[in-house]
Length: 265
Ligand code: BTN
Image 1 (tube, rainbow, N blue to C red):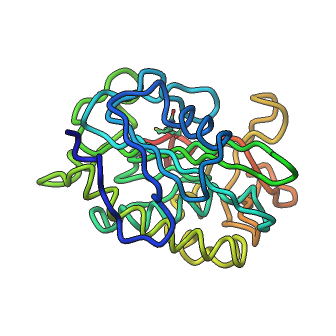
Image 2 (tube, rainbow, N blue to C red; image 1 turned 60 degrees about the vertical axis):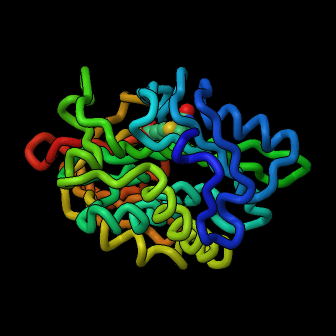
């Protein structure tokens, strides 16, 4: 039996109920289908492997069996404020949970968790509106036991197994991540991004760095700018290196400029 089956997490509502699968195309697909069929706020789907795991901006998420954590949560945030910043709150909560293993873990806006400049975990939020209320699936992938990364990931990804003398199990990672996520999400649902900002900002890897950002349609208006920090709603504030007023970046991707890059993009 998988180490992820039949676990309990000491949470009040997150991870309840929990469905585990040996393999799925994508835990997000299963959670979206379960949400449509009435899964409650907090429901959790995990899988030992994904055959079509997906990441942000249409990318694939490599999901080999048994080594890493693939999970999706169903959230029903009701009329909570700033739904667009939910992904940031998830990033902050996940970082807090992973900090039990790697205290120096940082956040690359919007919500990648980095360790030593490389990507340790990613988050993909997918939402739909039903009867006037949002139904959100939050997919999370954490590189736990994998030591080898191929292709472009070879230079940009890391795992707990690579960062630590002894990697924790996936069950141990889940047991740390879920309570931290629950606490952060409760703050966010009650008070918006402002209520969780202090969990995010001190760990933001971009603040003060030179970055490339898209300010027009995809790729058309990419500029170099210095990241200044976050607005009260979680938007990234940047000062164009060419001069002019600071800009707000509300969505899309941000790249650390070569000279300051570390290794994650
Ligand atoms: C990213 O950084 O691009 C987001 C990666 C999200 C990957 C996770 S793995 C579990 C869940 N199921 C998916 O298909 N994707 C997310």
